[in-house]
Structures are given as C-alpha cells and as structure tokens.
Image (cartoon, rainbow, N blue to C red):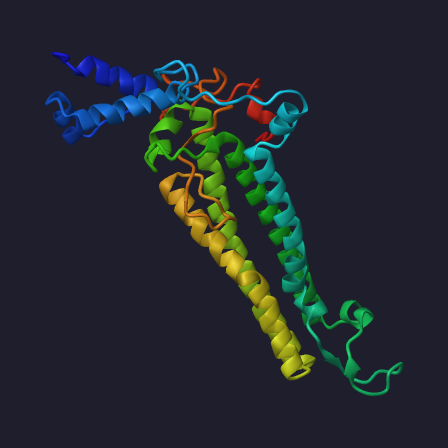
Length: 314
C-alpha cells in the first residue's frame, strides 16, 4: 500500500496517458482491487502487450508456436493489415462503375432525341448526340456531370488513403476499453495530428460532395425530363443511378462527422461496429512516433525517418 499515490499517478499520466477520474483515484487510495487491476492492465498493454517482454508473468504466458521457413514468410507477407489493405483496394476499384453511372446522367440515362437528317424520326439518343451539337444548358449539365465524377473519384481516393493509414497505425484489442485510443494516441502526437487533419478534410469533402451530387442530379433531371424524356425509362434510369451513389455519400457524411466529433479513426467504408482502440504493434514505442512528453497541445512534426511515411506521406 503506497502512502502517496500522487507521484505515481502523475508519471502514469505523463508517460502512458493513463488518467484516472476522481472517483477512480478515491477507490484506488481506498484499496479497491478492481481499479488497481484496471491500471495494471493498461500499463501492461502500453508496455508492449501481454507476454511480449512487458509486464506479463509466467514463463510461457502469451507465447505461441512461431512458424518457420516458407510458412513464416507467408505469414509475414499476409498479415491482417495486408489482407485488409487488399480488400480495401478491391472494394474501391469496384466502386468506380457506380461513380460513372451515377455521375454521367446525361450520357447513360435513356433519352429520346428528336428527328434529325440522319435519323428522320424520334429515336434513342446515340453516344455521339450525347456529346456533340448540344445546347448551352446541355453543355453545362455535361460539364457538371464530369466535375461530379472527378470529385467522387478524388474523394474515394482520399478516404481510401485515410483508411490505409488507419489500418497501418491502429489496431483492435478486446482487453482494452473501447475509448482507450483517445488517451493512448496522445503519446503519439504525429499520429494524433495527422488523424485530426484527415478527419477534418474528410468532413469538408463529404459536405461538398453531397452538395455537388444533389446539384448534378437536379440539373440532369431538368435536362432529361424536359427535353429528352423517354417516359418511365428515363425516370427509372435517374432513380436507379441516384440510388447507386446517394447511400454511400450520406454514409460518408455521417461517418466523417462522427470521426471529426470524436477524434477517432472510424472507418468510412466498413460497417463493423468496432473502432480501433490502440496503436498498432508495429509502431508501439517506436521512437520516431512515440513522444510521451510532447502531449496533444504542442504536436511535433513527424520525423522523416517515420516508417509510416512509406504508406502515407502528407
């Protein structure tokens, strides 16, 4: 039983971002074992994790059979982070089709063009007619279509970039509280600063994208339904194209708002309820990013030797 907990609690907060509430401090001083176990578990995890040279006890705790040879190399090449990155890449590539169909409404939505010299009766608009000999309003709509497509592709690229950073920098640990990362990330100020900037940029992009997608849809509806309507076919095409992208855009806006409000690396793509709650083992206590004395108010720039720069260089 310590006579004075204050020096120890101050050091725990400074070096390990372990900050207890007033009630927890009172229970700890009163000898409540549950609070002490909680502190020890946090300290054990932030000193390297269970059984990996940290505070774990016992000669075999945390040890597992280590693969050798080709199996070891295969395990190293296809760890959880690598698999998650591959899935992310495939999912984003597949999303390009939806972006094209949902953006270029004046091109891909079925339309009826008036009779021309080449085709002397009303007919389904050809690809050539969708791009050439257009009215001023049609040219404006086509330009907005392509601007929307460009912003969609850029936004998804940036969100995938952010997601890749989160996959590499953060991890899940069921033994830790769900909000553990809020305190632990203060020990890694370069990560905290980068995540904050990415969350803010994601929110701004989401708001701008929602406005542009809505504008593009309204302008396209006016053009198609007023000048080139094919009746039910055109209406169905417009609604189907809108449904391809609008749920995704709204989800991006919602998740980016939550990420910015909480300061957490919430995924903008997956629907899993869990949120990363600890620093990835590859960077835990790495001197290039682990700076316990800096704190969140005076964030130092990341070292050029930061190993994460091979994945994200902002």
